[in-house]
Each structure stands twice: as C-alpha cells, then as structure tokens.
Image (cartoon, rainbow, N blue to C red; front, side):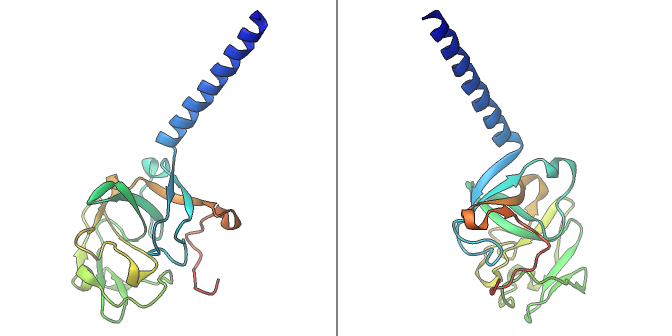
Length: 186
C-alpha cells in the first residue's frame, strides 16, 4: 500500500507540474485563437484554429504584412486577426481605385482578395503615431479593420501576438507564411 501511495503521489505531482508549465506557456509564450468570419480569406478561413506567438513582439516590433491578433476595441474579450499594413510614423491612404499608399507611394502587395471598394477613413491620409499600426483583413470588402472609426489605428501595446501556426483543420496544419500571396484558386 505504501508503494501505491508513493507512486500515486509521484503521478499527481507530475500532472500538476505539467499543468502549471502548460498554463505558464499559454500565458506568456503562446495563445490559441480561432478565426471567426471571413475577413482574412483566402489566407485564413472561418473556423481555423491558430497559435499566436506572444514572445516575438517583446523583442522586436511588428513588421509589415505580419498577421497579428489584438482585442476588439469594443469588447476586449473578443479578438481580431488582421494583417499589418501601416507602421508607426507612416501615412496611409487608400484611393477609390483601391490603391493603398504608404507615405505617398503605392504599396506593392497582393494579399487582398479583391479591389477595395470602400477606403473608409483612409480616403483621407491617416498618419500613424509612434506606437500605432494600420491593419486590414485580406478580404478587404468584408473586413472591419483600421478603415473603420470603431477600430481605427491599433496600438502596438495592444497587439497580443503574431499568428504563425494553423493547428486546425488538420488538413491545413502548418506554418502560416506571411510572404505567400493567397489567391482564391489556391
């Protein structure tokens, strides 16, 4: 009986240690999040389960085209997943032909699923502050993003992490490549 109690205690201690390590990992290193909606089509799909890296931005700033998660401004318990378009100190503007301008130069990118029909608040130049980012969904005409006054510019301190891994559906499991152009026929 004493041997059984010793083994049971060791097993319980091991389970507790694994649980604590897992909780610390999820609190400080990574966060699991789900895609809800089609604003990031065709890069991400409704129902995709993702892992976000919470460490990278403690040592470096978000880069253009990173896919980031941040709390929805009106409900911090909900998260948005968007692509970084404008960086701190830059001026972003979108014309009615759907062109995105960074500091007056057309941004060369092909992430958008279609031509932007509504530039929103970016029809006029939007100058980003010291710790502000302009983010957009890849499904540009069906995305609530920095073009909307309710979202606006995102503070770097509000960005939780960079998405890097799709864990579900299993058929799409793998690294999310921010440099890959995503087209509907892929």
